[in-house]
Length: 366
Image (cartoon, rainbow, N blue to C red):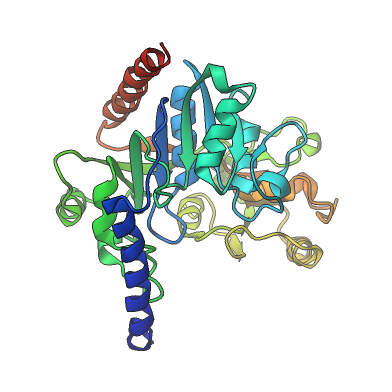
């Protein structure tokens, strides 16, 4: 099959190469803005952890400044620029921006497929004068904007240097274009990885001196009820209780891969029932009836349904969720943790860039 797809891959490579060549020689231009802009993205089809790393940046920046997150709003049912407000939901702004809006009350969330227009609309909005920085989600390939810091993510288990271009592999552009990144983060590093693994990855990536390499992993936080009003009094459900009380867990997700969550939950239960849907899946009445039936038909006395924060945005307002499973639906939040005590260095690089360019913005205006 790969042999048959090689001609298509070569055509794709020509198209991507021609586009990047036009940017490199100035036929197509990248626009700079006079405030700090940080881009987070990848060159792989899905699943590298863009949203958790975007959240890390927002958590780092928002205590000291007004920060905005601009996304294209993948799979939303709207078009153009939208500034999220109290009436926004996953249909209007996309599941990941909606997730961030719910978690970060002080962050301005906006969506626009045209990032230049999105940035300019943010600057012209009521929040424009107070903005200290903008974080662009999934924008590494959006070359019409030239960010001050370009962060490229690559999955530990699917390193971009070991992958091929579409449609043979999962790369949206050649791995050599990692040279555009200021920062490369190897994400989802497993607990079982050895020092030799990290040395080999460092050698494989072969970054330039101007680039910084970091390694990160996920840490899971306390399980929280999806429907707050259905929380049972006195229950403080943690993964430790799953082990002690011998819970059966139904893992329901619509993400690129469940594997990372499965490996984690198997540490706490040997009764795990994965139910997997495609990434960004919109749950239908038929889907939810099927999930409910599997859950109710289980003979286990103690059982719960666990899902991701991203899936929660598509379930919380879904009218098709059966009432009989709502009290048993929980969300497993994640956060990014840097390895090898790299957190301080990463934070200093980001905050140093923002601080320096915030001053430049003031001088520019004067």
